[in-house]
Image 1 (cartoon, one colour):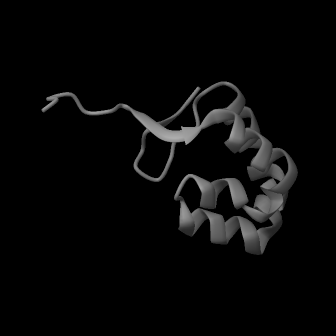
Image 2: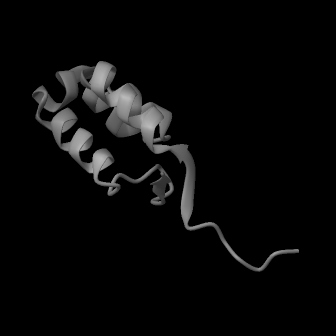
Length: 75
């Protein structure tokens, strides 16, 4: 049995990136990475009035976006 814990999410960077690109204003990328509360917030505010979706898009692109467990999404 392995003693190591994964420090990277099981969610894929490019899947998250494309979801954010096309459906970011609805928070679909946040539901994909299991960030449900902020996903609902994005859904009701159109992606934080588009500003939050743009910030997420940049964070995903540069590898700084994290999933619901706080792990970076894998490349």
